[in-house]
Length: 189
Picture 1 (cartoon, rainbow, N blue to C red):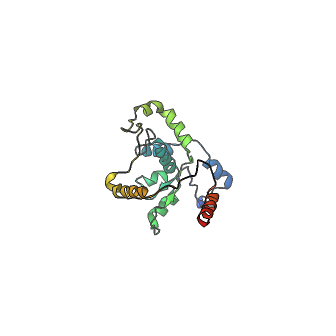
Picture 2 (tube, rainbow, N blue to C red):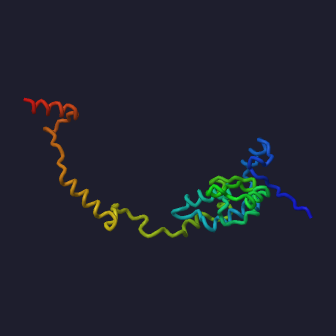
Picture 3 (cartoon, helix red, strand yellow):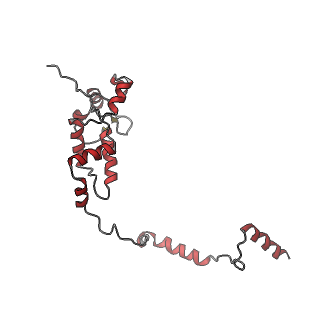
């Protein structure tokens, strides 16, 4: 029995898509089952709620638009047959993980993902349920840890005690250059 190729195509160079078709498929905002499944799987690791919601949303956008060879996923569900063949047969010699385009049409932005999540969940309620880390909202003076930076802070204090600020004459605002010129005249006279 011959296996049918998936109805989705890669946005890669060798996909055989003409310019207009590529533009249309990459700007499509229709979610398919494969893209929704990938979103749900990535939501397990990157929940866009709480104090890190924007960081996690950035991760979701990246993972929805790219498939990395070193990620833990079912590649046969998200890659085209050509990309899957390349992944399994060619060895990575660069040391960096290779990146593939998912086979589904949608290339979601953060806005599209927020919209999808708002349609499925009450994100305001989820946000309310997120715990705020203790001390996050308290305002406090920043200070470096004594154990790590104590010696440097003491040296800085010693240097500051030895530094004497120049005196200004009579509260007049004189440009620095003129102060030097007048100081040299006084020394010469």
